[in-house]
Length: 137
Image (cartoon, rainbow, N blue to C red; front, side, top):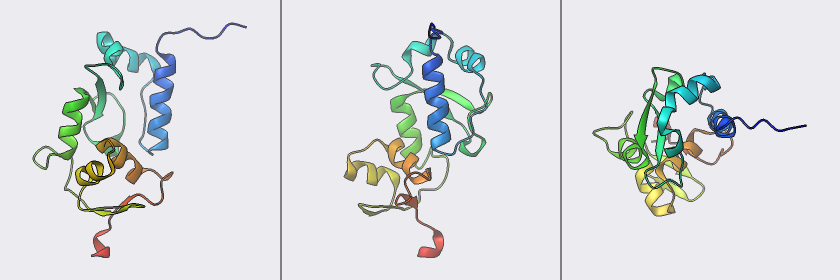
């Protein structure tokens, strides 16, 4: 029995699984995903010097055509931590390592990517990581 050798199918399924783990809707078919990436498909990921990401415009809507845009990894981090460009207000977070006033401050102190901290706060798989509720003062 031969394995499916369709280029990029593994990467598509990995991104889909990661979205599911983060409880983010993922509505792209493999063909939509591959066509959307186009020639940049080889630039996606962490290890490429000019790494590109599939960024959500409105996170609650999830991965779907019309709600995603290509960004460099650096631009994506800046958009998520800069209050002038953020998707929402800066909110304190609670982690097993303490409370922090923002994702960017937690990521610096914990030496983690800002997206890792954000994803853990949004994931049911990390119950000790969360955004601080306004009722907690």
